[in-house]
Image (tube, rainbow, N blue to C red; front, side, top):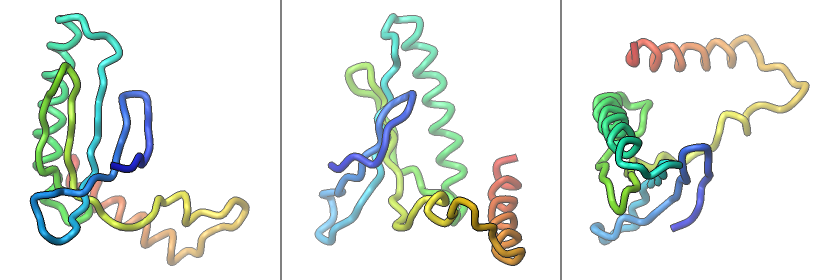
Length: 119
């Protein structure tokens, strides 16, 4: 596994799915509750399961990574999603260089399509 990033709730990794003979990559999100008291873990599990259910539905959109599975192990939570090769939007943005109207409209159209699906 290779680290992709980390945030306030956990870490994200790129991992090879060994079920396949061809190299198949997945994104693994490892979520660690900061507090492991039973009450906090119960709430965290409910929120995690609700989020996973939402991600399963959203994954039907071709612009959102498919969620393949989610699970809990040793009081920590994992999401396994489709890896989409590419780069972050921040790599498209160069400080001080405005986008063309056409490029801006294209981005907004793509974002609005996803937003319409979410709401």
